Image (cartoon, rainbow, N blue to C red; front, side, top):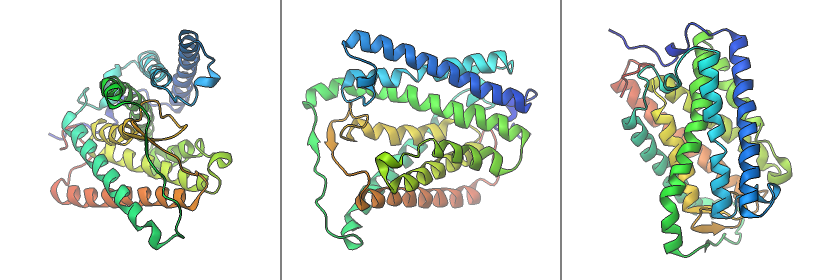
Length: 305
């Protein structure tokens, strides 16, 4: 008996108006929760919400990650009220996270990060010599060690919030109604990428950053449908974001980072960094796709390993 495809929990309430209204409701709840959490956090820390946006201290970073609880609340309300299904259905037909997939995704994300770092050593072969960014320790190691578990927990809350919205709710609803990859993967990922377009900060690199974000979104959608569970995409996302706890860019969500570097986000060096990461991700996906095509011909199932 063939297991149900990932999008099967979306039936029968797959009307487009429900999906659009659901996306609006999810984000209304998210922004309302974000506003409330930032106000409460600013009052507790004796600062203003605007001064907390950079999340440059552990407390500010904690407040930032807590705002993603709004996504979880918005999702719960949406699927219960608009679609008459349970929150756990967003994980896939099995109604749970496949932690084996999660671990594999996490290991692949670590491998991708290592490969991207190694590619940085090739940069002088293609670009004029520049001063390499230096990493500075941001806090005593003992202090950082006490923050690791809470920080990883908050990152887990954040990545599952985003995955359940974009690879859970949106992907399930659109794939249940449309077969075209343009509708359930490419267009949503393009829209999400465009939301990150910030030429004032990144200069020409804003285009490469949007492209990178779009590529990641498309690949995670394909991975989720092929494995039939949210686990692999969540593991990949977690592995990527957890790197912020070890090394971050000064002034950009660096409150939990043990080491900080400074880099000109408009520089050719940043261009190389973004393009090398995108290339490694595509290579890793091509390798994974080739292996699963040989060893696992049946895709889009709840039991796929």
